[in-house]
Amino acid sequence: MTTLPDLIRSQQRFLLTGHENPDGDCVGAQVALSQMLKGMGKTVHIVNPDPLSANFDFLTEHTTFLCPRNGDPLPEFDVGVLLDCSQLSRVGSLGKSIGACGKTIAVVDHHVGSEDGDGSVFYVDVTAAATGALIRRLHADLGIELTLPAAEGVFLSLVSDTGWFRYSNADAEVFAMAAELVSRGVDASRMYDAINRRNHPDSPRVLADALQNSRLLLDGELACLSLDKAMIERCSKADFDTDSMMEPLRSIEGVEVVALLKERFDGNVKCSLRARDDVDVQAIARQFGGGGHKKASGATMMMRMAEAERAIVSAVKLALAAQHGH
Ligand code: 5GP
Ligand code: MN
Image (cartoon, rainbow, N blue to C red):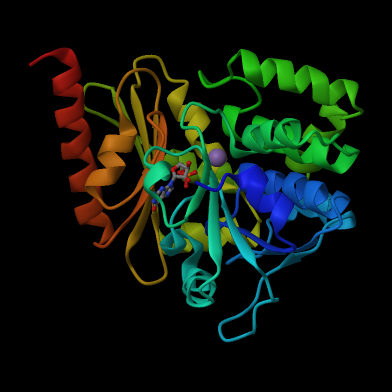
């Protein structure tokens, strides 16, 4: 069976991609892998189904992120690499075009079930905190030193998926890698500034108005926040990252699960779930065709908001009852 290091040694042209609305782990891993491949003299293109969030502007100083529109031709490639997801369906319409090229697909991922993804070569560890950590391991496997941009990419991945080292996936590997990356020149505080301290002046009002609508349900064990189209529009106008709305809710004593429901333009609902302790929110997201990790998962729910709210409340209720043992 071909391994990813073998594939990298033997092939020349690589197309890196990842999931819709690429997050810090996804783009950090893309930067680090593209740096590694370019250093080996390979041709590399990064293509994403959505444009980069402005929070990641600092990466565009050294890395180009393409976002081909429907029908635009893809750059030529021998190997497509799926990062931070394992299914072409997670890559939006771009996934279809990539699949249609009939080239080798490699999967680099840490999500539950990623070993059964759409590739033929896998570099997967569901216990890894971030996809970027896998790219750091790949450097070691191939005996390649990290450049500073690669180190920053891996660091971005680690901080994105561990909530700046607060979540339970921040394990010994994460802290050891972080120490190494800092010793290679990564300036953690400068990166925090570049990513997080560039909010729009309207953002406090947007955040306050959104959180105003949060509700505590199921004896205070579920915190639910629904954002309708109008609020989503305000968030996107202020370029406000809705993910950050979940942490204040998860910080309420007694809350076990946070559900963020976002109304999409087609009227369906994108749901994000976060667990504080032992509730398996990946299993809940899976019931709606989504997935992720035990403590952080998501799904696109093909239903209206009111129905999605009811469905989530009853799924969380069942999960809590199972956990409480009745
Ligand atoms: P978020 O809530 O930040 O969108 O996602 C949380 C986690 O769940 C991430 O690891 C993300 O990749 C995963 N996730 C989110 N939405 C989906 C989905 O629709 N399908 C799958 N398989 N995973 C998802
Ligand atoms: Mn990830």
